[in-house]
Image 1 (cartoon, rainbow, N blue to C red):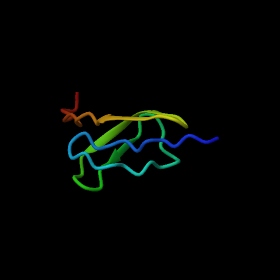
Image 2: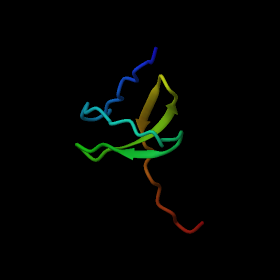
Image 3: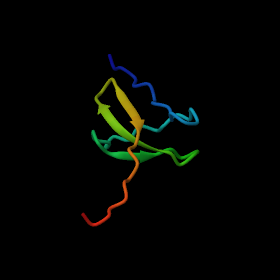
Image 4: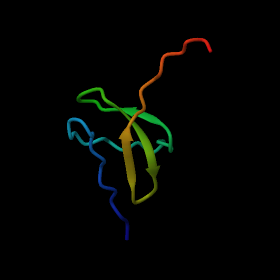
Length: 62
């Protein structure tokens, strides 16, 4: 018996992501439809959780 992983959806435009086998926790992936970046929070055989990727902060050389 195998479990199918429900494809996670973009949190902005609701488009389904195509789950990649090599995704790892902390990886950033981009929605093909709207370009919004998402961070992989969890990936297992049964679950893939995404959240909006953090904004890149400006480096002031400090």
